[in-house]
Image (cartoon, rainbow, N blue to C red; front, top):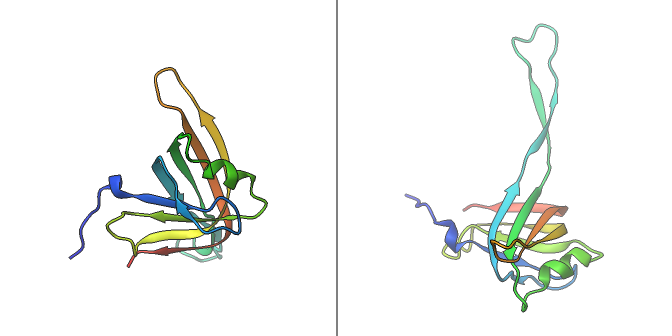
Length: 134
């Protein structure tokens, strides 16, 4: 029987450009992955209820990172002229379970008197994505 995992052990690997290998994104504290799928209504006369067919997933997500003076991957990835490799691991303790794909990034820098300097990055698919859960 499976077990739940605490998110404290999640990890993100990101490439700084479209040709380099991905490595750990230091200071990452949160990631999200939205795999919403388009649906198209195909309801016909006489149907008992509305019916739909499924289209393509629209992959997008976000990363939250505490800024570190020894980590610049997000800035480089945003400036890349090619989509970058991105791996979202559910846990360091379950390395065979992750989401992977190429992504285009947009980043913003956040600074407040009551908090640490952080970066937020939104991404969209720059190619096919795969989710490995087993």
